[in-house]
Every structure is written in C-alpha cells, then in structure tokens.
Image (cartoon, rainbow, N blue to C red; front, top):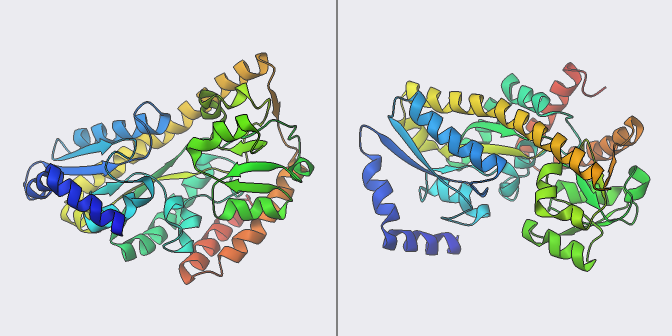
Length: 341
C-alpha cells in the first residue's frame, strides 16, 4: 500500500492521473489505461496490444485502451490493486499474482497438473467459471473480462528429468505458492526466486533446473545453453493470463462497449494457443537438432504428478470459502468432461 501511495503521488506529478481522470468523463471516446508485465515483443505482449486494437475496432472507436507493457506504471504484483484503486484502469497480468488477497485466486491463476490443454481450461471458464470468478473479483472492485492461455510450460534441467523419480532431490527455481508445495511432496527442492534471476541461478549452479515458461520462451531466454534436458510436451503448469478492469469503469461502459472487450478476448485466445503451439514445435525441432533431450513423461508419471497435485488442491480448498467454491467447480467440470476419474 505504501508503494502504491508513492506511485499515486508520482503519477499525479507527471500528469498521468490528470490525463486519465479528466478524460474518463469524456462521452466519446472512453480512454482506458491497462498494464501488463509482458514486454511488447513477447507472445502475450503482442496479443494484448492486438486486444487493445480490437477493442477500438469492435467498439467503433468509443473505447480506446492504452496497454502499458513491461510493468511501466506500477510493479507487476501491484497492478491488480492499482486498478482496483483507480490508479490505472485495468490489469493484464494474472490471478497468480494475487493469491495473497484470497487463496481462491490460485484456482483462477494456475490449476497445477489439472488440465492438459488450454482449450480444456478455457472450456471451464465458459462453463460457469467466469461468472464464479467474478463473484470473487467483484469483492475487490474488479471485473474479470476474460482470460487467455498459452501452451503448458516445460521444465528445464541440467540433469535428466525423464520421469517423476528424477524429481527427488532436484533443486530448481519455482514460483511461490501451490507449485512449490506440489514439488516438495514429490521430493524436489523448489527455490523461490524472481523470473529474471533464472538464467544466472542455473549458470552458477545455485539450482539444477527451472520452471520458467514454455519451451519456446525458455529457449529464447537462453536456458538451453545451460540445461540440456526439458520436459516436452509440458504438463505441470499452464498459467492463466487475465484481463481485469476496475469494476466502476466496467459498469460505466454500455453493453456494446462491454461486448467489444469480450469479443476482443475471444478473438485473441485461440490465436495465442495456435501461435504458442507453433513456436514450441519450432523450438522442439531446433533444440533436438542441437542435442537437447526432450523428455515426454509417461502417462503413469503424469498421473502420479496429478495425484500429488490433487492433494494440494484439496488443501488449498480449505483456506477460504471462495477457494472451496472454485475447487468444487473445477473438480465437477473435470469429472463431467472425463479429465478426472
């Protein structure tokens, strides 16, 4: 909160808030300031910039989003709160950044080991997940417009990672939260550190591997200059990118403008999946030719990972009523669609 207060003061001094506040009352067009942590040249960054262009097109120019990339206004973990307070208008990061506000956000940020494809997870949102999520988001003065998802992420390692037994004693970079708990149950040694420190940590041997991103992004980061093993196709993690807006700003939009934002997300979501798949396939071919071993876990090992994940899901479901509701909804959907027995 102190950081946000300082940010608010600084933005006011630069005229940023003066612009957004004074223009917000204009009847036509409606300007909105969004922020993402992704850079403009990344898969997700490009998709979000296209989202902003599509909103303008679909709304006939009545809604104009400026998408600030690379966390250029506030820190990544402050974007949601900054939006809820009206410092900016929208947050394009993900619910994984805000699990500290309510454990339920974990179930809207990454269902570790739960779904095999982005399409399955998007199906959950279409089948009532979005409405359920907004019961939570609205409590924080935010509205979840929609989500999009890239391909499952790949683990990178300097040692073989052919199956679940190789996790025992494996020290690797991990994001905080549910993931660390799952891997600890399987005997691994997760080390929580920022994304930007992964390459250095692996270079110095501080860790033997990393959960960073998709195969293509890991390759771009240079991880496979060091790590000669990777799990592919990925299975353990599929972070959900959300597009959320200040609830008061959302309610101020008319039905046509709200639909324009929803339709824009519906357009970019399949595009992200297709492009992410394409980039991963290209990376897989290049890495194989370069001598990197791509390790496709057996169904038995994948199921063992999921079993450990299910135990952790159930524990997280006890941490708040909203978490229990989200957990129950995921389990019901998975069983209905044959994803879970």
